Image 1 (tube, rainbow, N blue to C red):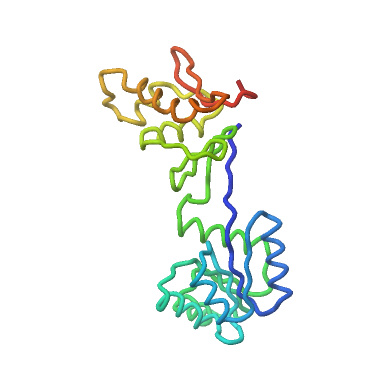
Image 2: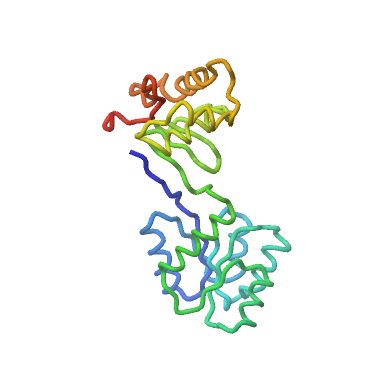
Length: 234
């Protein structure tokens, strides 16, 4: 069956209130994400610059360096574009504008909902790297929609761009059949080659995803098209 897999997000939480940081970290970790922590601005900035995170949750009022200075230095000195969600008890328009000018990407006032924090973080990451965190999976075959990398059973597959297009279409439709006409239109628009080019491309894809594996996934439906299906759905 087709499933949408959400990649675990690496989140840096820079918050000096340890109970708030722990509650947020526990909530994120319980949902499969990977939180890291700093309890002052200097340590937080060091982690943000020296490690890779998908997003940062940043309190405005911090010891050592406040959140506004953190953002300014992250953007101007370190040239890092990691999305930043700022937390603060201040809720005036002037306060929010000050945060956006410093380089934050979104703004949440305390008290806040943990569910809202996660939704805003996911939205920030999607905007920063569209579709990178999404993948398609059929059985043990996985295709990352952002990087176009495919793996089967954890083993990376060597796919050309045409194979990626066909595979994405088949995985989106799985376990249903995709017609030959639909695939030809996908690849060549209204002017498909006169020769049976699609059959050649299907052969190349089948060699890549099925040849070295016990269970074939790519099935030819004669006279109709092709389907990608796990044995349980056959």
